Structure formats: structure tokens, C-alpha cells
Picture (cartoon, rainbow, N blue to C red):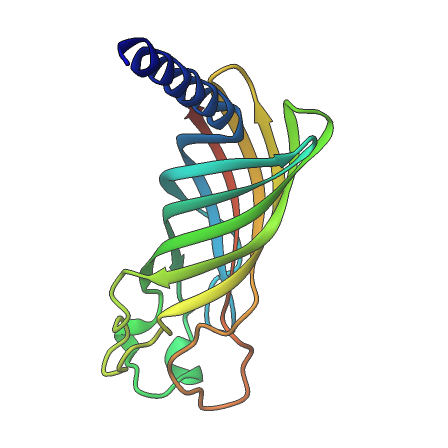
Length: 203
């Protein structure tokens, strides 16, 4: 009986060890952070990218040779600034909202496909990103919630996986209008754009 118990224990230990070893290759985690170069594309906002930052974590699932998926939870922060005539374009704002600096903070969840580009070290990343605005949405005078609470974006970029260290560069473009206030005349939608340059650690 003892021998049978010992044999079962050894087999269970071997199975667990094999499973953990397989999961180590199948599933990987990490953290990353870096710079955001972001802008809000819309009437009444100054053109050009402004510097911000992002920080978060990720999980990689390698489904097959040369292909996997990657999910992230990222806090990203950028800034924008209104133009001199912002009050003339939108309702419910004042002259104090002209030339006003605005912080845009989002909690974002990218869901990306990882496609090897000839080597497992270099991957093409593409997929959607879902974001929830976590900064103050009531930023302009009497305007109630100048920004919508969420956005959907598209992500495309490159991921370089070195031993332990990872380096990433990606372009993110918003698909939906995040404007929450009314315009006096015809105006474009408000859509976010950003370039993210990051570095991290893969465990």
C-alpha cells in the first residue's frame, strides 16, 4: 500500500512539474511603462502631439508557433490644450476655457494579436483597445461632462522581446467620438491619437 501511495505521489509530482513547465512557455506575464505622445484631434484643440506617460501590466498567451495573444491593463496620461476661439465653437463654456490645458487620463485594455516576424524576438501587434476615462470629465465652465466616459481604438505596433527586457512601439487611433458637449456650429468629432514608446520586464 505504501509503495502504491509513493508511486501515485511520484506520478502526480511529475504531472504537476510537466504542467508548470508547459505553462511557463504557454503563459507569460510582465510590466511595462514609457512615454505617450498624444493629441486630441478635433475643432478647438491645438494641433501637435504632447508628452505624457503610460504604466501597466500584460499577459501573453502563446497559442501556436509564431502566433499568440496579449492582453494588457494600462493607465495612460496625456495633455491637450484648447485654442483661442474655443468659446466661439462650443456651448456652455466661457472665455476662461480658451487656451486651457486639459489632462486626459484613461484606463485602457488592449487585446492584441502577436505575430512573429521571422523570429520569436520580434512581433507585429494589432488589435482593438477599450478605454475608460478616469480624469475629470467636467473641465469646461458650465459644461456637464465635456468628455464621454469610454472610447474604442485600434492599435498597431512592434514588440521586441529580449531576454527579460521588452521594448515596444505602437500607434493608437480612436474610432469613436469622445465629445460630450454641443457645438455652436459644425465641428469635427473629438478623436484621440497617440504614439506609445515603452520598455518593460517579461517574467
